[in-house]
Image (cartoon, rainbow, N blue to C red; front, side, top):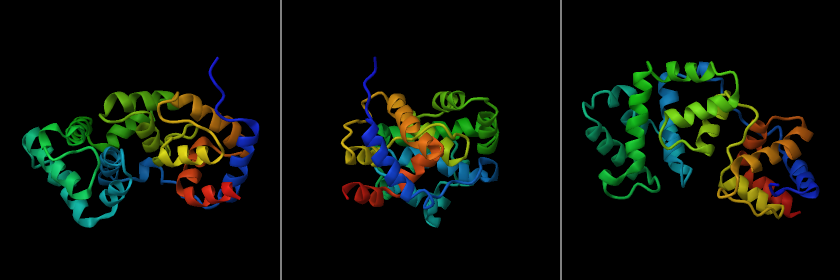
Length: 233
């Protein structure tokens, strides 16, 4: 039998804290309304945020960075080596974690190249996600995303699908959400069974509040400091 991470009293505390913030949440627009450039930045940004979220934000919103990683710009590179060097330089300038100083050993830049080539091979970002959207279940969408794109694990695949409104009944558990869990005395970490923690939060917190796991994920992530303060009270 799997361990129970979240007791009834802990779940109630989380429900109360999340309920206060349920209207202070921003959800992404449906994937069909995203442009090819926006979708590509989301895919590349998902690699950049592993270890530290701030570089991913700059990648999404800084006009100078956006020009450097645009589809038009990257299509100019004839070889993967040239593109990997370029993406490595961008990642270093952003302070992306786990890239190091040597482009040859930069697994994130290498993943960025492979993901770009995959999206272009499938007809572009919108065509790629149109294929993902055709799956009838969220588990199939998660599985295909993880198999199709490099550096996409349990968190990254769910975060992308939630942001694109392609998933509702899942959560992209990250350091902030694990921090909220610690606020109610739950000692869990990414090393624990991801899906088990995810399922407990959905069943014991989201469902009693009448919201989806995706909305709970965004509530906890976007209101992290406010919720931690509420849990201290």
